[in-house]
Length: 209
Image 1 (cartoon, rainbow, N blue to C red):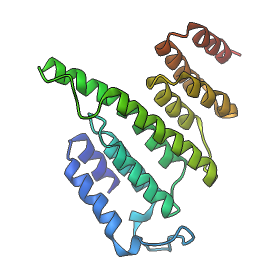
Image 2: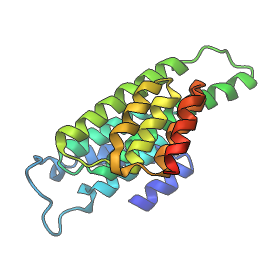
Image 3: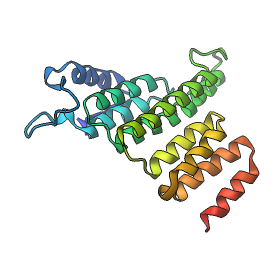
Image 4: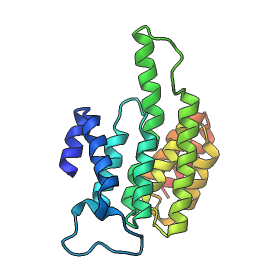
């Protein structure tokens, strides 16, 4: 399934991804509480890697319009007790792509002569991504799911692209021991986007300490 999702998303076969997601939600054996653990021999469809693959497949949509589907898969994983750091990281990465993806698609449509008005504006896409990132980070804390460097970098990228440098800085400061060059570079990019040269240079200097 994971390989198929990767191929389908690369080929733009979103219908296949949707069909698998419907199957996942409707299969009777998947209706279980968080307290139950998958027993030996139970369907591999219950695992976190498949949810991660589904989120990644939905998030690969070029216009960034499937963030709601990504969120639905994440929530399903949470309800079934299988969401982990990797699952959340996939969602946060898709949230960051949803902002850039919508903007890129809009530029392409404008070059093609389409109207400047789109169903999902850049502002709406950014606000949605920020709200869902806030929710995901809060949920990780409530469930005791550990954050790692990719969590911080992806969240910082979302906030930076949405113009929320204050939140990007907060995540960087909260990252503590997991902060590495990738996390620092994400904050530098966010600061540069916001025109905050002081923060960018200070972060760069801190990476050398």
